Length: 535
Image 1 (cartoon, rainbow, N blue to C red):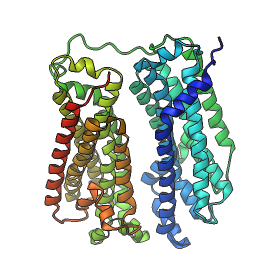
Image 2 (image 1 turned 45 degrees about the vertical axis):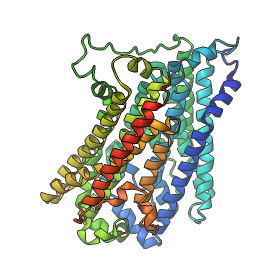
Image 3 (image 1 turned 180 degrees about the vertical axis):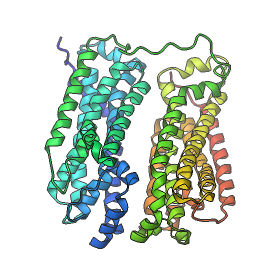
Image 4 (image 1 turned 45 degrees about the horizontal axis):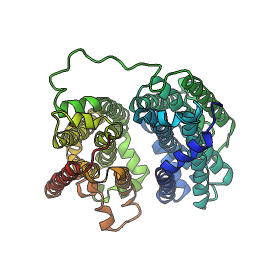
């Protein structure tokens, strides 16, 4: 029997199972691209505004995050789009590609479905081939959609050649990290560990690219990163294709390595065996909260460290905030009611609000992990012992709340500390930390929504991520595009005062949010106690 026999059938099944998820991802990324480009056109309507933006973005913090400006003689909308959005979109597609591959390979092995599949007339390479095929299809569609969306904007500077290079660059990064995931699932024994391993490679790639852009003497490091290859295609400027060929070649090589290893290892095994646990459990581990925290601690620590690094990198940028506000007064449109606060406090308020929305992701992961443990058959044995359903459910909620608190506070401490160093305003440290803490009530509402989904609609848990994306969209575009008030209030973060730029009283709003969060958690608890537990 050929090692690829049944490949087409397995791929069709994988596409059938992922059709809604993949379609929603493609539509979401396309819509995000539209919003990003239209916001750039709105924010910088003329050449003078774009020149001011180029000066504003020419600082180490922005360069580390999005890359070095490659404007040549004209920082037009096309080059601005390539400079400010390419890294963001490439990282998003890379994460999607990693999850596609691990979901159809290592996760299927954990659930036992791969063993059933291979018991038929199916080749040994088929599970990984099917996952890679779906990932390739996903990235090709993303590249085409990105090209079409950019052309649909209708700006003369965003032409077909640059749009095609941009779409291909984003798709290339996705393909490389699909290959990285193909190797990671051979090394790691669980889907979660494989995702973490591939995500660590993505983080290292981002770091190498950032260091290369910030330090001219280390610019060669960009060629060690797929994100660097994508940037060096310079869409709407040089329109290079050859850096993308490097990425495709690396992706093919990684896929071949993954296929070679998958054929030689035992089903369910990994080249990197799990690390042996402690001989004796800690006193906290037998309790639901202790166990939930132990399972989630890697995610919690990783996000906390990442946000501390982000705060340390971006805190010094606050020293130039007054200049930013002078050169780019449209920043005030983000929070017009805080216009009198000055550039430092206005920029700090924007940062705190954006990071608070981002912190919904690790908090949501703490609760959605409960669902993946159910699917893998780990929850039912746990509940057959002394752990009650309500106890396990509340443990997940508690760890989610702790994750939200720790990550927001970690960022507040980091950015507040560096802001004091560059501005000399000691009161700013406390104001930024307090502003970060006061975002907890909005985060509690999002956690409450996640709890309801876990309790009543486990198969629709993806709606949580749509809510998080929507909160980010409202925060970024509501004021700029003058959306109605009722649309803005659909985001819990819009009900809070924009500290440290504002000093208004939002105690009532925060108390209402805490009360709503408690009600949502209680509603989710009723559903979790009533529904069938998978596995």
